[in-house]
Amino acid sequence: MGIRSICLRCIGDEPARALAATRATLVKCQYCKGRRRGVGVHELSEIIDDAVRTYYGFGGYELKFDSDNDSTYEEPQGDRLHDVLESELEVPYEAAVDLALELMENDPADVADGEEVFYSDTQSYSRIDLPEGEYGERWEEFSTRVTHERRFFDEGARELLEGILGAPKSEQAHALPVMEIGPECRIKAIYRARRADGRKAAEQIMTDPRALERPPKELAIPGRMNAGGIPVFYGAIAEKVALAEVRPSVGSFVITGKFSVRRRLRVLDLSRIDHVFTGSIFHTDYEGRASRLRFLEGFHHLIARPVQPHEETLEYIPTQAVAEYVHNVLGFDGILYGSAQTGGVAAPESGDRPYVELRELTDEELQLFNIVLFGDAGSSVAANDTSGLAFEPAATDSHRVTKVSFDYEWTPVGPGAEHPDLPF
Image (cartoon, rainbow, N blue to C red):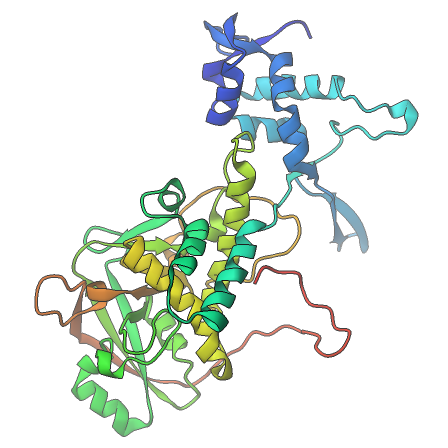
C-alpha cells in the first residue's frame, strides 16, 4: 500500500485526534492533500488498536425467515470494519479503508497455531455494551440507606448522589441532558388530568376547574417525586397521556386541563437517555461515561414504571430523595420522563446492544412523556411572578372512557423461574 499519512484535521473525533497529536509530525495528507501535522496511517492503526479491540466485538448473526423459499437464514449484525472506523474516527472513507487494511495485515493472531484473527473483512462488528458497574452499586447503597437506615436526607446520602448525578457545577452534572420548556421552546404547554367518581363529581370539577391544579401543601400526599406535604405538579406533554396516567376504568369520567408554561423552565431531560451516544471509545474515561449512561437508562425505567399500591410507601422513598437533590441541589425546575402507560419508556435490554447516536426525540415521540415540576415552577397560583404555569380554564375538557387496551408479556414466576438480568 505504500506509506500513507493522514493529517490531524482529517481526524474528526477529538479524543482520537488528541492521541494522534502526541506523535504528529509535518506530513503530506493522502486524503485532503494538505501539508500539515499528522501521522502515518500505520501509526494511527497502532494508536487505535487497543480501544477497538476492547470496546468492539463480533456482531453475531440473527436468524431470519425467507417466506419466498420457506426457509431460514442467518443475517450478520453490526458493521463492516471500515464502516466502524469511519464512524468512530470520523475520517474520510478512503482513510477508513486504508486503516482497516493496516489492522488486518498486522493482526498478531497466529492462524497456523489455531488462533482466530480479530480483524477481518468478512466479519461484522458491534460496540460492546458496558455494565452499570459502580453506579449501580452506589444506587443500591443509597436506596438501602434512605429506605431502611436513615429516612432523612443526610450528608452520606448526598455524597452517594453526588457520585451518581454529580455535584453542583461538576463535569458530571454539566453532562446531564437538559431541556428548556416554555415560551419559544418545543414544549409550551402541559396537561394534567383528574379522575372523577361519577358524572356528578365530573360536573363539580368542570364547575371549578382549578381543582386540576396541583394540590395545596395540606393535601399533598406522597408521590413518586414528592414526600407528603410537599406539592409538585405531575403533568404530561399530551392530553391523552395525562388521561392514561390516572388509569381510568371503562365508564369512568376524566377531566383534563391545559397549563401554558409562562416562563422558561430548565428540566432534567430523561427522554434523551435511551437515545444517547456514549461518546468516543478513544476518550480516557469512556468506560465511566458508558457505565453511567447505562445506569441512567435503568434509573429512567425505575422512575417511570408503575408502582403497585402495596409498594408505594417504600418504593417512592429513593426517587423522592433524588427529586429533592435534582431540584434543591442541582437547581432543575423539573424532570421529563417517559410514560409507562403509553410506551414512552421501555425496560433496558440486557446483554450487548448497538449504541444509538445522540438525538432529540421527534415531536410525536415527545408526546409520550410525562413531566414533574417542583417549587414555584409547578405553581399556577403564586402571589408573584415566580409561578411557572398559567391555567387555561377554557381548554378544560371532560371525557368518558369507552375502552381500555392492554399490552402484556408472558412472565414465569415461582421456584426455578429465570428472570431477565436487567438493571434495577
